[in-house]
Amino acid sequence: MGSLSGLRLAAGSCFRLCERDVSSSLRLTRSSDLKRINGFCTKPQESPGAPSRTYNRVPLHKPTDWQKKILIWSGRFKKEDEIPETVSLEMLDAAKNKMRVKISYLMIALTVVGCIFMVIEGKKAAQRHETLTSLNLEKKARLKEEAAMKAKTE
Image 1 (cartoon, one colour):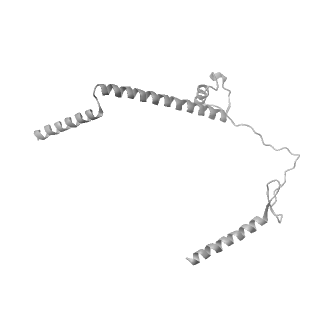
Image 2: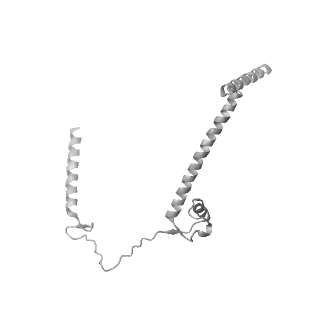
Image 3: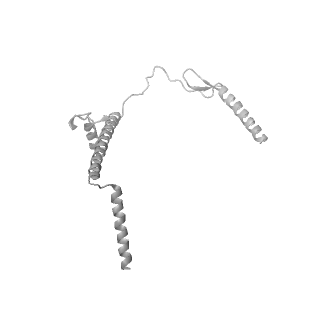
């Protein structure tokens, strides 16, 4: 057990030495580029006069018929004619999310209506004395009677 802890200590100190050597050979410059001290690994500097070619364009997507219906149902557009040829993916995602919420609300409402309906039906069945216990006892009595009839015939 003692040799195992000694091995751990040696590995830890070796790791710390290697980490110190690596961190001393790399330094962070002001432009957040990694540069080696000895100068072998330098990142080429961009000339400030050349404009960069980065555009912040939103990717556009041609909606399918189903996606057009979702855009209309979500309330984003009133008619299918108003939908542009291409729409952003964010607009489609927002419309889908809105539809998910509407469907969730619909499912909640249907669940509440179903629960109320089942409570009403259960109360009517209780007035007719159709409880689960009585139905189960009748079924067991019928099965016993059928088993007795079958035993007599054999």
